[in-house]
Image 1 (tube, rainbow, N blue to C red):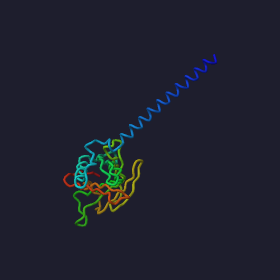
Image 2: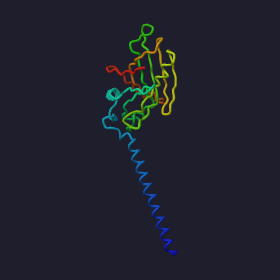
Image 3: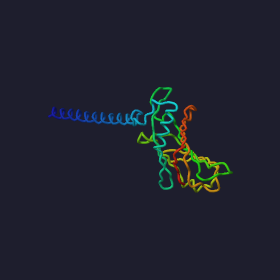
Image 4: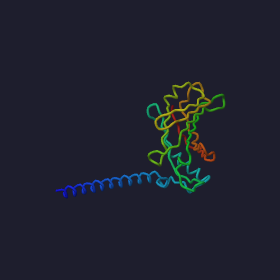
Length: 213
């Protein structure tokens, strides 16, 4: 009887240990798979610009941002969705995500059909941290609080806004007595807060992307 109890105890110990090991292996495999899915090499090949530099890189990035940028509306917010890509880190010679090489993205708008002081167009800029979305082929959507802006007295402002996922810096200048209703996207700028040489400005010249207030 003692031997049977000892045998069952040993069997149970081995069985539970084996199950735990299997679960751990599955967990490690899932983590490994998830990590690989978030690596620059996992981005769609068509958005891999790690073999481009200079003017060729700028043209490729411009085309990517122009074709992917969308402005949608949800309640009192405007959501800006923009595509992601990879490029070459010229220092490390490694392929990296755009939101690793740059840490800030800025969208610059001009008010439509309005002139202030006879020569200036209204300016609106929104700046936020460059973050990778759940789908690595896109950056984290930008959420602009239009409801808050429209209830603010028109004028020159610089304000930080925070929500659960990101912080924004909002800037306006050359604003008339009423907020313009339509804003045309003029440029998208990628920069790094601690590396002045990491700057990529994409002008929007031949395509009209409009945000409605």
